[in-house]
Structure formats: C-alpha cells, structure tokens
Image (cartoon, rainbow, N blue to C red; front, side, top):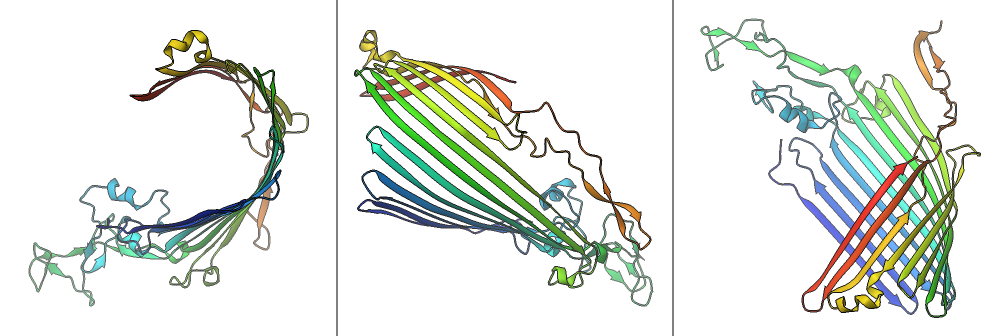
Amino acid sequence: MIKNSAFSQTHNLSLNGKRKDTNYTLSVGYLGQEGMMKPAVHDDYSRFTGNLNLSTKLTDFLTVRGGAMFTDATKRYPNSATGFVADPWLYLYRWSRLFPTGALENGEEVRDPPYFDTKNAHTAKDKKKYTNLNIGTTFDFNDNWNLLADYAFSTRLDQSTSSRPTFSGREPWYTPVAWNDANGNRIYVDENGNITNDEGMPGYRLPYVNYITSDKTYFYKYSFVSEKHTFNAVTNYNLKLAEDHNFKFMAGTNIESYKWDSHWSNKTELIDEKNPQFNFAVGTETVGGGANWDSQVGGVFSRINYSFMDKYLLETNLRYDATSKFPSNLRWRWYPSFSGGWVITNESFMAPLDPILSFAKIRASWGGKIGDQSVSNALYLATMDINKNSWLSYDGEQYFQLSTPNPISAGITWQDIESLNIGLDLRFINNKMGGLVFEWFQRDTKKT
C-alpha cells in the first residue's frame, strides 16, 4: 500500500525593488507533492501561486497602491468504490492480518478495499482557484493627519469531479463454492492447493462477485463560486498639547458583501467507463445546489488614545455595526470599550532598576460588548423545503412536496461578549546578558 518514496518539489521566485517613488514586489511559486498510496493511479497535490504588489507616491500628499493574488490548486486521489467516508487507510488497519490485502487467487483479484479498490478506482479531482484584486490610496494632509482607503475584490471557484466504474473480484466474505473446470468437472487439489489429476481433496474457490454493478456506477460534478467585496476607510490624527499631553484620534468605516452559489449534478449507469462523462451515462439524473448572500457594515468605528507624560494611558473605542442577517429593528448595535495603563518604569522612583528592568506596564480594560453575528442567514425567514416524495402521478412523474414553514426566531440577535482584562507587561534588559519579556494577562469573559 505504501511507496518506498514520494517525490516533492517546491519552486519559488520573487522580485522586489524600488525606482524613485515606486515600490514593487512580484512572486510566483509552485508546489508539487506525490502521495504515498502505491496502488493509486493518481495520488498527488499541486499548487501554483502568484502575487503582485505595487505602490507609488504620485505627489507629496498622495500615494496609490494595488495588488493581485492568484492561487490554483489541484488534488487527485482514488475515488471510493463503496462510498466510505474515510480513505483506504482505514480499511488497511480495520481488519486483522489474516484478511487478504493485495492477494490473488489463481491470478484473479481477491476483493479488498485498501488495495484493489484503490488500484481499480477512477481518479477523483478537486480544483480550487482563488483570486484577489485590491486597490488603495493614502492621503497625507500633513504630518499629523492622514486618510487610508482600500477596496478588495476576491472570488473563489471550487470544482470537484468523481466517477465510479463497476468492480468485480473474488469475495472473501462469502462461503466458498465448488471449483469446477470449464466442462463442469470437479477439480481436486493437494494439501498445498495444487491441482491433481484424480487424487486429493475437492477444490473450492471464493465466489466471483460483481459487487459494484452497472446501475451503481455514476459520474458526478460539483461547483462552488463566491464573490466578496470589502471596503475600508480609516483616518488618523495626532495632537500634542503642552508637551505632556498626547492624543491620537482614529475613525473609519468598513463594508463587506459576500455571496455564493453552488451546484452539483449526478448521473448513473456509465456505458463508457474508460471515458466517464455525462454524455456516456444513461441512468438516473439528479441535481441540486444552493445560494446565499449577506453583508456587514461597520458603520462607524473610532478610537481615542490619550497619554500624559508617557506614564498614564487611556483609550476608548466605539463601534456602530450592522448586519443583513437581522431585521431592521435588530440590525444595528453600539459597541463601546475602555482601557487604562500605567507605565511604572517612567516614574522617577523606578530609576534605580533601569539597568535591568527596561519597561513595565500595568493595564486594565473593559471590553464592553463585541458583536458576534455567526448565525444562519435565513434566521428570520420562514423558508419551506422542496422535496420529491414517493407518490407518482398518472403519467409516472414524481410529486413535489413543500415542508411546513420553519419558525421565525424572534428573540435571537447579536451575541454580545463582555470582558474585563487585567495585564502586566515586564521587560528585563541587561546590556551584557540580553533580555527577557514577561507578560501576564487575565481575562474574565461572559456572554449575553
């Protein structure tokens, strides 16, 4: 079942440089890995990646940037013959050593999921492609005030293809049957199982079974496509008053939109197992899929930092967020938080410890409420599932059936997480012996 060796390769090439006010980075990479399953026709993984980033300063106050990233990955592996959810390694260890693995009986395969089911299986293929495009700009109004705006678009395409042929072999689970020649005459064997002319004991064989019949063959395809739009804008302003008072103001917005749809198709009874595709299957056709969309708005988020003499620190945060997953009366929520710190090493009474203790700070924060909107997108929609039932019309068509509407969740909204944090940050520095950083952090969190 296992190869003595498997080949892997990794290749990466990157270029980066600068010309006047323009910076660029370009990188490409390839990863190839062979799997360890010896009987598999294909057991491997490959991935190609590319990345490009550019940034240029057009004027003293305006910088623009952009980038692109692309990933294309493919995994090939033997498809399951019987539909087990685990891979063939499970069956290799599931039964005792007495179970024949990779064995032949008079030149014919003895059925076993690890070896021959892997060897005779069709190759399944999973392909994943990801693309990200982004563009942004920075306005430097002065040394203390700037504005950053960025937009990113990403798309993902997943595709998988699998098929199953017929499988036949000698079945070790069933009672052996009489061994006769082509003319129906009984075959006799010696104690070693070798055929004798007219002496010895009657020969028996494992029954020959077509355990995956034509009606159980199929061709299957699956696809998933998604798109995501993200916009961020942040402005920062620094203010210093009377040397000892330092302020930092930050405000911004964030918008995300995400949609996806999926599709799968299956058709049974392959008539050409060497070239599996929908055109070469004549059995039952089934199809399905799904779609979804949601959006979030960090309508306003802001932060104010205050420092007095670099000793006493205060910070306050405020967010006003919204999500499409809730109805309008529950969609928006305020989220405040506060924190404070004391840099004790900047106090005069700590000066004697300066050779060994370079930095020490005590901090505490109240997290307020942090919103969690990881709930179903249809939480407030009374959806009805559509299913085929077993009833047939007069012309042999199946009836469709609608389920009863699911209840609307009237009381579920944002999950709010409140936390109180206390921390200690110490940094011991010795010019001759190096340094040591110690941090202690305790969090008391509750969910509402």
